[in-house]
Every structure is written in C-alpha cells, then in structure tokens.
Image (cartoon, rainbow, N blue to C red):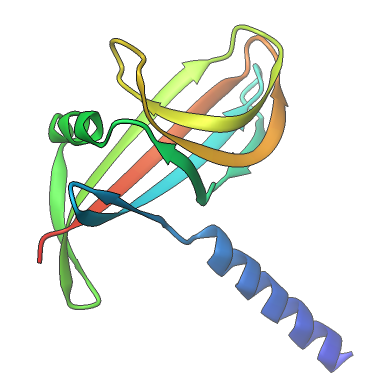
Length: 142
C-alpha cells in the first residue's frame, strides 16, 4: 500500500513538472521561454478544459513577435541568478462555431497574422464557449 501511494505521488509530481515547463525558442538570436495557459469555459461559465501546451509547432515571424511584445508591459525578474525581461498578457474571446481545437496561435490583434503556434490536446467547442489565454514570455537580459 505504501509503495502504491509513493508511486502515485511520484506520478503526480512528474506529470505536474512536465505540464509546467516552458517551451524554449530562439528569437533574435536569444533563447526565449514561452508559457501558455488556456482555459475554456462553457456558456454558463463552467470550466471545461485547462491546458498548458508545451509544444511549439513553428515560429512564423520572429520579427513580428518582437514588435508585438514591445507593445506589452514588461517587468525584470531574476530566476536562478539570471535576469529576464518578462512579458505577461491575456487574450479572451468567445467561440462562434462548433469545432475541435488542437492548435493555439499567438496572433497580431489587428491583422490576425500568426506569430507562432502551440500544439496541444484537442478539445471540442460550441458557440458561446469562451477562452482565456494567459501568455508569459521571458527573454534573457544577460
């Protein structure tokens, strides 16, 4: 019994560590860390899905990503003795069609041009479902 409980605790810790990891990419020759947290609620506000995707499919336009991030508020943080510029922002919206979603894009808010794409487990949405995408981007200063 003790072994089963220990194995369960280990599995939960391992699963949590995998889901909380950042995706590292190169932007302007600097390694950046990008975190995404997605919350999907039904039309009544009930949480349907929570995801932390960790697989970036591609970075379409690093130059536009940098321009976009320059418009966001940022802070300077220190992690493991290293300094980072950190950008955090949120996108919210409502789905208007019934579909299945398995990719989330960081897009230019005006022209809707995608900068990068995260792949994740798929989920179904119907009209009236809402989403919140919480982005955190860290770029090294050192």
